[in-house]
Length: 593
Image (cartoon, rainbow, N blue to C red):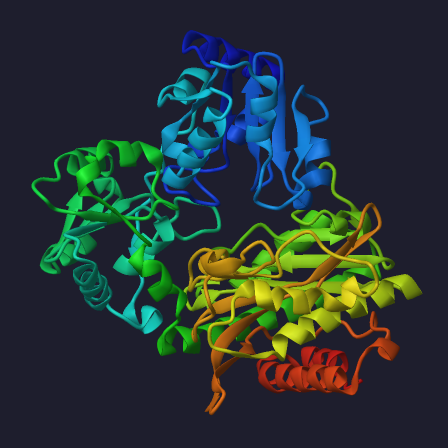
């Protein structure tokens, strides 16, 4: 089936004189996760991972992805002609060097410009031009190739009340307008769906696990425009928007708006997030490149959001308590499919109230499956969990009061000395980040090495970042901050108070087991003295860390003290919310070491 689809694409490539065609994992909004209407890369290749780029020539089909997906890709590509190209460095696919090496001078590489940012297209053109290879664009080749393509979603949006958001639309728009005035621009184009949801205090159902709606937005000095399918806006909310000087426009009319900018007006847009198709519509003299103003505002959670996040963590802690107790009890009677764990966890989270859905599809990795970093169990192929080995469970919930993301690695039977050693090295890295105090101006790449230091000392490492920003009842992956060795130099954002970030070092042994320990942390003020302003992280996640996997000889007194203090906090906050049986279980799991 996959090979037939590739053959169909090749015919359409030939008709448009493309020698190669590049298919990313993206949509016109530069989203990490997106509606099925834009999941062409998965349809054409069979690869279901969230990151990867497919490139097709007349005699080769390749998928470039990073180490998180190597094992998954090898399995999913096995029945097709698609060849896995392993990225040596995360987020840096090697497709352009490969095309330069294998295509003749004068060849044309095709793309759909809606699926690539301005920065990406500029980089492609510069690099391909060195070999006299041209970049061609087509906005219809996907439709021509993709039979039975899903339609754009039409689900209605809903309003996020102030009791959750903590700030009105009017105040957010006003803050953006003030920043525009300083930059001397007359309008600001916003393409990213989570920014739009945050600005207008709306949420939606258009993307699985991400409560966003497909739209564009433009902020002007005296009004805001929301480009969205009118079917998606409830009548009552549309009336409220009208009173707040928010104009609704059809989604596809963004093209016309951008083409009709007049005089000397400037529109601010982000080259890192705006697609190349829209960029070409705007006359060059009207363009001012910069950062999306709302991104940094959104990343710094306000007091109401922080207070709500604490409530979300309590809900999640209770749900996970019920899940792990259920699993322990059930394993005494039978094995448990990985998929059943994910299903049960959804039900336990639903029971906590204010629940929207998962923040991502749960990763339930038993034994060797835990070494597949972004593993997703399927009913027909998943492992049966038994009372032995190691289970890695990475999951998250979307509540109206916040977004959660937690990973726990649990021993279901006796662990080997090697497993204990590696688990403890990961724990040491986790604690190093959790306890760090750092001067204002510190960037994620400076923090990342602390998470890896204990592993490095033993010649070990992991192939993913240590931390990502997390939205407030929004995308579980949110910028601009991250904790990663890739994000370095001036391009990396410094940590600001209010930033909500994951702390998740790990270790993976192929076909044997995976280890990851993840909590979410909030950046907060620490102290101000003659040496400057210092910040620290407050751990927000509330659930025990498995102590049966620890090699205590590798922990320092300070690390033991942190773990005991963390468990004391978890016990104090969760026990009042539990049943009597659950209380006993929690007290045992939080017992001081």
